[in-house]
Image 1 (spheres, one colour):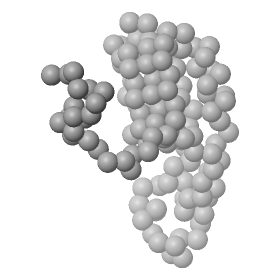
Image 2 (cartoon, one colour):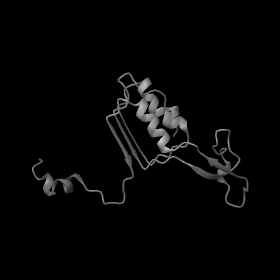
Image 3 (spheres, rainbow, N blue to C red):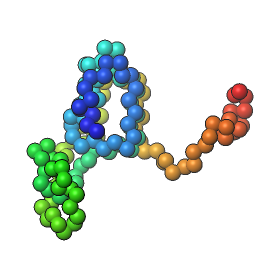
Image 4 (spheres, rainbow, N blue to C red):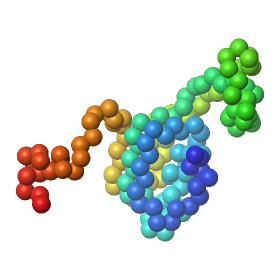
Length: 137
């Protein structure tokens, strides 16, 4: 999924991404652009769970002008396609965050990190049996 191809989201107030890898500046710019295209003043909450920026990757070529694999070429196994291209991305989180700080003035809550999804999920019934939720009907 390419965020930049989604276009304007005029009423989007909350955006949560999980395990999304940013591969180019267009994607981070799209998030910042929501302020300009959003009739309601832009994002108020942004959650990024395990969303790195791809810094460097080796890819069996050939690659398109944008640095993505030509469809079908990545299907070949190691040893069958010796044309390896290296993709390097110049953007870093400190660049993105400083840009967002200036452009996303309406942002009230920003959470970025990595959740441990290996824990056991509790059912609603199990949660309500815990002491801190005893007075909830």
